[in-house]
Image 1: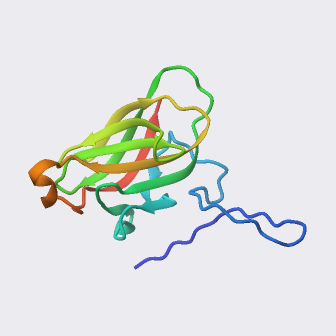
Image 2: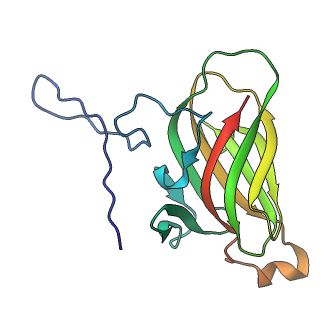
Length: 171
């Protein structure tokens, strides 16, 4: 077992009170760089399943595991810069397959503002898809969706879809 600490900047008001502090993925940084590899274990939002968690695969690899239908993973905050050239960029993710197929919805700022969707297969290890070009500072949310429906859906209910190791955006 290993332990991890979290760091957030706080503000102490003149009267000595401390306003509520938002949990982010920033640590000591002012912003995250979306064009560098973002380790999954820096997520500050994990919801949708009681079993969704960060775990150590080996001494060098931590992943988000137990990702099932509807799970939401989020990172706050990326600075995408002010490059207005191009209509799209590429999203890539390193995953560990769990024998399922489905989609990973890529959203910014909230869980409804979708900028792209990456499909994964039973044996996918790298997800890659085009997404809308984004500028400025944004939270990023990834939402897992199973592609099983009809009579087979019940056999895959609450089944782990994949483990997420890292992701990044490319211009």
